Amino acid sequence: MNKRVEQLETTIIHASIRGDYEQKTGAVNIPIYLSSTFHQDSFDTFGPYDYSRSGNPTRDALEKTIAALEGGARGLAFASGIAAISSAFMLLSSDDHIVITEDVYGGTFRFVTQVLTQFNIDHTFVDFTDLDAVAQAIKPNTKLIYIETPSNPRLGITDIEGVVALAKAHDCLTFLDNTFMSPLYQRPLDLGVDIVLHSATKFLSGHSDIIAGLAVTKDKELGNRLAFIQNSFGAILGAQDSYTLIQGIKTLGARLTQSTASAQKIAAYLDGHTLVEEVFYPGLANHPGYDIHAKQSTSPGAVLSFRLPNRETAKAFVESVKIPVFAVSLGGVESILSYPAQMSHAAMPKEEREKRGITDGLLRFSVGLEHVDDLIADLEQALQVATESVIASTSK
Ligand SMILES: *Cc1c(COP(=O)(O)O)cnc(C)c1O
Image (cartoon, rainbow, N blue to C red; front, side, top):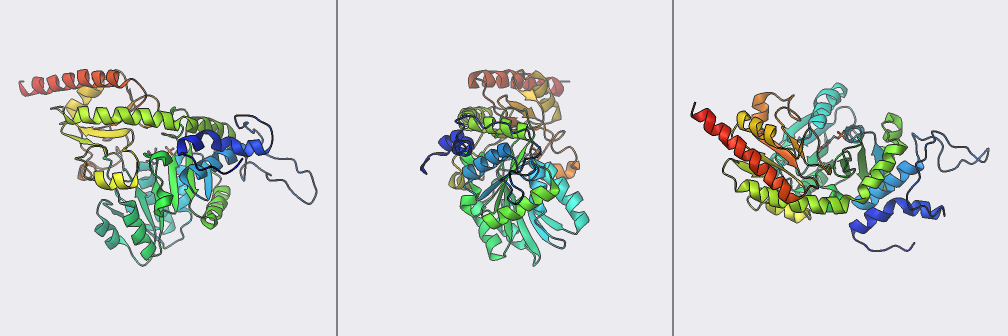
């Protein structure tokens, strides 16, 4: 097939089957190659696959797909988002130092603070909305700057190109967790980032059915080093889940477009509600990172968070909503409501949490594919119940 210049929505549909076309099967879906090992035709020369930890045709199709979507040299699929992230950290060596966003995903926080420290790899947490603070945290042995934007759960925005410039000046690698945006809305490798990481459990698979992770490197040499670690560490994605993820990715464009349009309306609705103290969504002009986000991404995405006055109102609200599931995770076809103080950030001491703005009234909402009018009507009635709970408690 000739090389075409096309939109990502088009690449998403066809990327996984181009390899199979070459094999002339004509199948429109990549087969699930359930084979741990591969027969070798010749005594001396081996075929492209030998053992599925090192390479599997179904996983290969997925890895090529994500590399094409992110515009990178090499894609790699892992057993979970955190497997992709922790494997990428294995590129570091003892005595290296990491500068990392203080808003980082909880599992990444745990790996950096409790596992990497065992290997003498140190870290400094910084507020990444402040580039000067990032610059000041860089030490002579800093080898990696780790970005997550928008961050969780307050959707803080990091200036990607600003951080990349600092990293290049100090000879550091940059990794970026692109889970919230997906390549459809943000392509960090184009902005100079070295490795993009994903929890593909979220928007990329999109159906709350599998746990999966992806990494894409900007250049080939780094890709080979990470592939070596993937094979050595062994946290690969199986063929069946690779297939499920390929199918999920095909509908990413349609899903994200609808969920984001709904998220815009819901953010505006919540922003105008008297009980809601604050809404965090990079698509609202009052969001502090609005301009930077608009410069480096094509859309604000489908996740927002908002602050109710306290734990009691949050509880009354959660107990009254009918449509969203109340759960950890995000990026599914169903709307997912989470309570960071007791879910993603439960392990963090209360003062640390509150310092990061994760108060007892903060809720995160991942907007799914339900009709937006139904979602807003549901939020409306639940906010009404929460408002009445305030009135009841103040008149006691
Ligand atoms: C969920 C998540 C992860 C971890 O991915 P798993 O697939 O759960 O291992 C990492 N980063 C972000 C931003 C996430 O939301």
